[in-house]
Image (cartoon, rainbow, N blue to C red; front, side, top):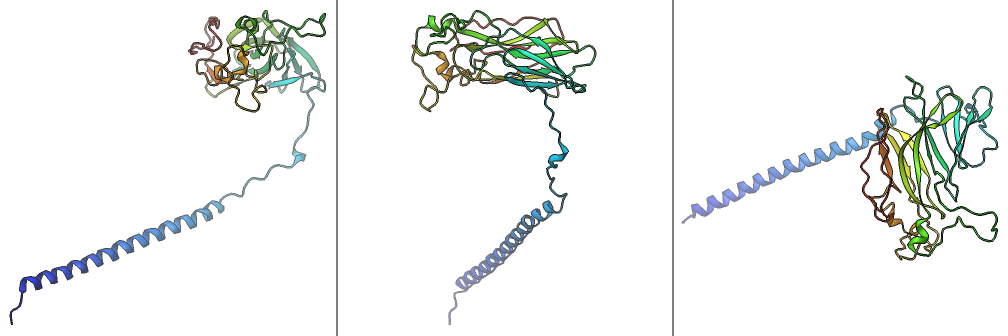
Length: 302
């Protein structure tokens, strides 16, 4: 009988390859199952490890807190700053800065700023310098709307409010309502704020005589940088519940949010980071361009 040894050898080789493949498959499968088991064990153990730590903190009972009335008739309170001695400075939109004495509960006026008031405009935020009370540092920061030459209501004409900007008109109609909010710092002697010591830091443009969103807040980080949040200075009530992006040239600019929060060249609707300096004050240039197209701010405070 004739035997095809070459074919037999090939068949034997195929059987050997098959055996090796099966062995490799079993090895890979075993390794995969081992890895899966390890992962499953890790995931199963993780919650147990998390639960084995300290018990979750429970909110302290209400009895641990004391409600202290700072001022029972503050007008329109906006913001406050706690002094190192636990006294409190707090602001009203009408321009008053009150000093609350922690020991006696007495409130006295620390300052009264002359501010422009319409809708939300007025005196906004207050903050202390991060180094307040050290080496003669007694700076108090305020964000407010100076009066400027913006039209105001005339009490002699009760049927019309001259301080209201029109919803529609010409560029000239809107121009007289262009104003600014100002961030400044003042010296505080422990009882009063010296308004004559004002150092202007930055001015933020605003379209006045119309609502809304012109508030702002001041905070400092651990490195002494000042952060000023600014409203988008846009009226959201004339767009039927839709985004206020009125581009008609006859519409008040305050009806178009694209000019502010959506515009990186505008200071409104932003969080501005400012690094205060100890050098002599250098005033910032005024905003002189159109409110719909302003230069990109690249500036530091004084």
